[in-house]
Image 1 (cartoon, helix red, strand yellow):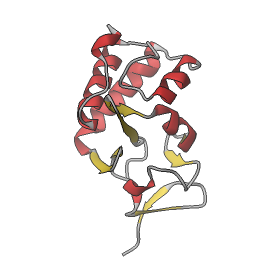
Image 2 (tube, one colour):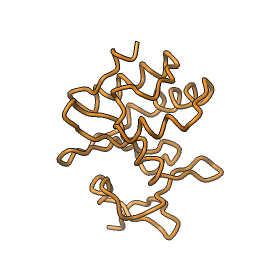
Image 3 (cartoon, one colour):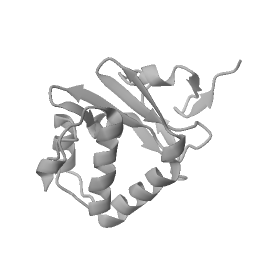
Image 4 (cartoon, one colour):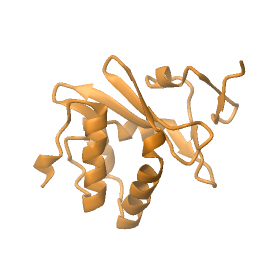
Length: 146
């Protein structure tokens, strides 16, 4: 089954494969839609059906408001800043195609007690996709004042 979940030719296609993996409740850490570092990350991470169902529901609820931003071999799927419950997704392009970078997401993105996302660090290779925002002292995004 994992063979059908290799890297794809675009971030959008990779996310579609990830959504399918969520729907099937696949927990294989070695899916090709994950960066090598993410595969290693998932080998040490317990994934439950409930977590996958929640992520699938969140994605489906907000996906139509998402926007992809690409720069070189990296891309980000982001959602409107007013909706802090839908965190960004990071993608990296390798020789096989586009993959999800959950290892970087885990290091860089945190969530508070209300499940609102924020950055743990301001310096990271995906910051290009957030130039229109400012981040407060706690890493929460805000629209840049005009």
